Structure formats: structure tokens, C-alpha cells
Length: 216
Image (cartoon, rainbow, N blue to C red; front, side, top):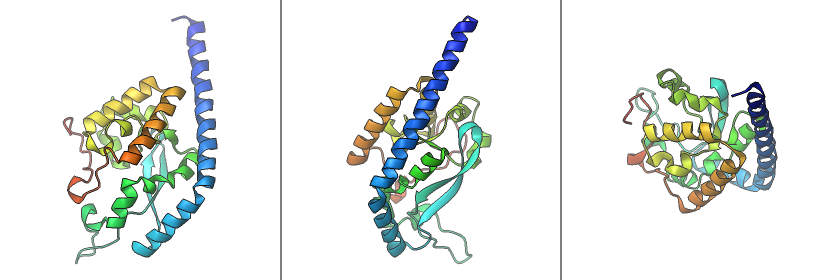
């Protein structure tokens, strides 16, 4: 590859990055404005049915592993055992919490993360900080792009597929990302939300933690 070819590819990447960020900003801003009544209604229902706080906040790794705080609507109670320790996730999620997850309403506050630039509308899902030290070099490539609310793995099975498959989809996206692919993923996401495909919310199908094992 010649010097000019490399320079041209870098320019294309830079233009694509600017387009993606501009699209993210405009869509997330409009989304927050249009969906504000839904956000308020869901927040009030969570406060009534589950309690306070309404938002769930957690540290997650973003682009190049930079840590940020992600926002989601809360779907679990703060119930503890006799020793004061939080009960397992499957014992704390409520029927209303299940409904919020099934409809993906719990993800809506992440539009604020998109607006801030923490994440994109499309990209590999931001996972737990604990996983950073157990990724293989290939799996860690998922951090070469900004994470997203939805991604290639989400429209190809979401939490109904193995960790190995999720990471393969994430890396595929890193190598093949484009504006048109992002639009395709967003449209597929809308479709899958309406038919609730690939979403496990029942207590016996809660997402298992990633432990670094290749066959998970």
C-alpha cells in the first residue's frame, strides 16, 4: 500500500467518524425530546413499583477501555439476605422489571450517554470492567470502537447466544463498520424489540458472567 493510499484510508475513516458522531448526537437529542413523556412515565412507575433510585448507574469500559458511567432504568430491588448482602439477580428482578427489559425500555437513559459521547447508538455493548483483564487479545479488539446501545451481536441473538459468539460478532463489526451497516443494525434492532427476539428475562435464563472460558 502506497503512502497516498494509506492517507486516503485515514481520511475516509476520519470522515466516517465525524458522520457517525454527528448522527449519534442528532438522533439521541431528538430521541430524548420525543421520548421525554415515556422517560418520565417509566421513571414514575419504577419509583412506585420498585423504589428509589430510579436509575441504575455502573462503571463500564468504553473506547480504548476508558471508563465511564452508564445509565439504565432500574429493574431490580435492593433486597438483601440476613447478612446484609444483595440477593442474586434472579431473586431481585421484578415482574415489572422483566417487562421493562423485554421492551428494552431500560436502555432509554443511555441516550444521555450517547449525547455525551460515552457511547454510540451502534457498537459492541459496554460490558463489565471486571472483564477487561480476562479478554483474549482478539476479544479486546471490541474496544477499538466506541461501544453502543445496540450492536451486531444484539441483532444476531443478543443474550440468547454464547459469549464466544458475541465476541466474534463484536470483532466482525469492528472490521466491517460503516454508516450503512449502522442503519441496518438500528432497523433490525427495532424489529427485534417489537417481536422480543433473543431476549431472555426469566429467572432461569439470566445472563451468566463471562469467566474467560472460550466455550461460554
